[in-house]
Length: 229
Image (cartoon, rainbow, N blue to C red; front, top):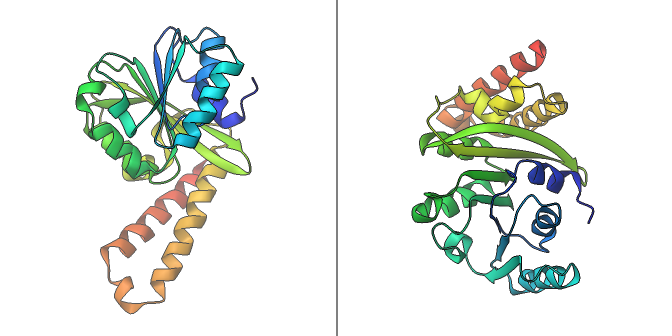
């Protein structure tokens, strides 16, 4: 089963030998690949959509993995019992939604060793939440698929100092290891923030806001980082 670059990057962050739960697992391609490659002995695929669950079950039947992969319809981590998953993957959702899913199930997270997360937006807020709630970001990667650049985060239980704001937006591990797509990543952040700043600059009231000052300050930090790259 061929995975695109995004799913392959997610798979690479799942520790070998751990039972996996893929939340919002869609067609179950990731879970099926992890089991077939011997990375995960078993997996749970959860999705709120009945259609997605039906597609996931078709994959388990086609790949003859109905014993190893359990497909469950439900909201977030409510489909899991404590101790049932050692690694949890949550991908393709907004960062705020991922935060809500994680914060809503502390009993499930107690026994989880590794989180593999791929936020579609608000990555900085998600990183801040992880650092502030007993999770240490141990690695990060960038993946380009379907014309988009995706941020993948791996976190494990542990205390770590909160990075500077600019590194929360970029990803401290991405910057530390100089990911091959880092320049494109920073340039994308600059372009998005520039559009936001220009929009606020058109309003005198917006120019006086804390949000505008924070945006301009972050832009300056990102441009400095890019110049030093």
